[in-house]
Length: 195
Image: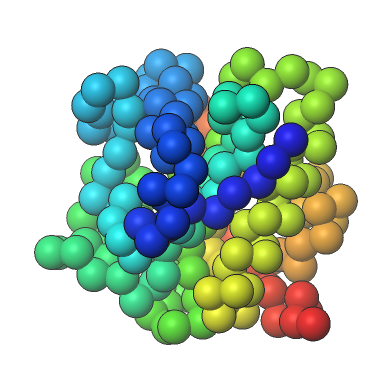
């Protein structure tokens, strides 16, 4: 099992990995979750898949097991910034605008994680290990990018696994029922991960 953080600068070194990640996202979000998202050539994408973002992939023998997208809260692309902030600003119909307790931050040291998934065909016996690899690589990559905090809109069962993964996380907004799942914005403190 490998973990790789992809960027527009290095994706050419990893063959089909980025395309496979977007294909796995399509399978997870469009096929499995039945979300109405943009897709092309069997891949899911959106306005946040820009050169400002990074993509963490857990993979084995070319198969994507899990993934996360990291986007700086300072990102700008037309009218868009990052998903949580844009939802708060009322730019996204699918996410309530009252998802945060406070105003969405814009700071060099704060990144957003989004499009978090473990592939549906990842065997149950290795899911915990895959999830641990995903969170470890996300934390490592975010720290290398200068992040001391990561915001993510994730399933509200996060307290169950956050400590197990060594995350210092707190709820940053109310629990919301979105597409049949309870979700919550979580703030992950990475300053304790400084070495």
